[in-house]
Length: 150
Image (cartoon, rainbow, N blue to C red; front, side, top):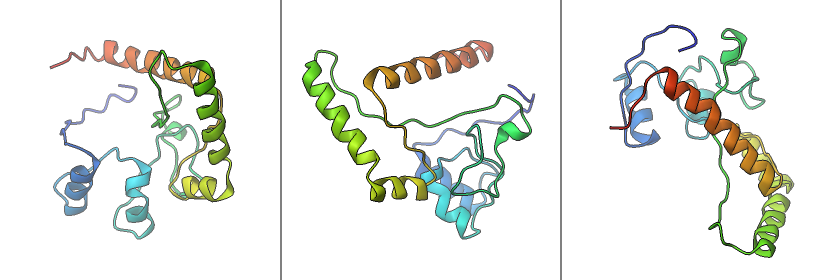
């Protein structure tokens, strides 16, 4: 949308089959998650064109960010932990403390970084705001592209 490039979307049932077809040459490009593709990039089995985060990845510093040539572009993958909305606040707070403690553990942080991820420890309210902001950003894309549910 931001570049005017017309790509044909080929739906897959997961990243694994998409990467298999990319490696086999059945498709020419894929927007693959870094955790699943980083070893193929490191070993030269795949050539990274760009990362979709706002800045280059420390795990693959030679690969540019799309935003370097498409100003304002950023697409991220988020992973978080949720609980039913009626979960007692003390349970949510305990889970949040424990997850944040794990995320700053040097071994966990190093593994996340090795897979190209960035640790974002924070509060449930901060995570909720991040999800709301991302939802609004992508809702604009859905509306602009006139995407409809099938």
